[in-house]
Length: 364
Image (cartoon, rainbow, N blue to C red; front, side):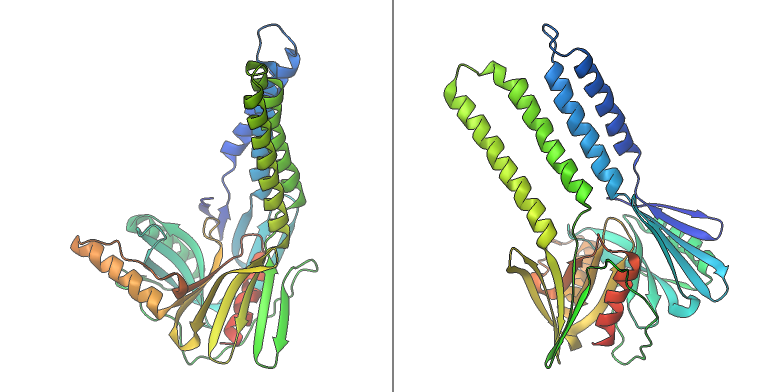
């Protein structure tokens, strides 16, 4: 979901746009109310309106519950940057030293659809990046970068060229104090030949209820409205209810998968490994040599919430795509899937994201 960005006084605000979802809720309430008021009226699609109302209300609430808000505050306390984040059930805040970030980088990149975009990133002292926003054009990225430079009083640089090796091989690393929330899903495991960190990205329990409510909305339309048009044709009835049963199975499987899925980063002597574990099976397993790492990136951008470790092979492929686009040549170049480690952090608090970043950086 695309972030909404705005500067206000001494702060940067990043939040989820929710107007359209509030409109969905209001539309759903109107349809549901009209359907109930005209229930069993002759030649009136009462159950169609009731079912559609349930779907729209649940869909709107699902996204409203999922909405989040970040605020980066400057000069609230001398020597520190304050971060505030909130969702519909929690508000939290923490501080980090002002000099933790050493610069702003506006970097031209290739997205997953092989299109050129511009990331605005904060570079931190350990050598990693925190992505704040992504823009489809250079002008908007530069305007945002200029405002961010004025807010944070640190220099912004623009890189329109190819992606360079951004990750310093020799660096000093002094972690900042980050205390994990009491209910954090992050776990650390250390063995003689490896160190690992893992976390889950499950949804809020209310969202599972709303997903089931959306399913019921469709079932209500079919069971009380659509089925009346085929009630004399048995094969159609069997097909419809079998399809609804299959859909319910998929919904329940998604809920179980969301609850049980964990993301893993395992660090060995000379390489780093990542994978996702769901239903007891490892998926998307990737290995990268430590010496091949060119960038590590965290994110506050609500449409790109992943922790990313990019390799030299990934950077070379992305650079070839950008060079081909500049020359007007065929840019359909394949980026090897095993060239980048990518793990979902969309359900984690910002403090947890930074904790994961620091743990990985301190061990590579």
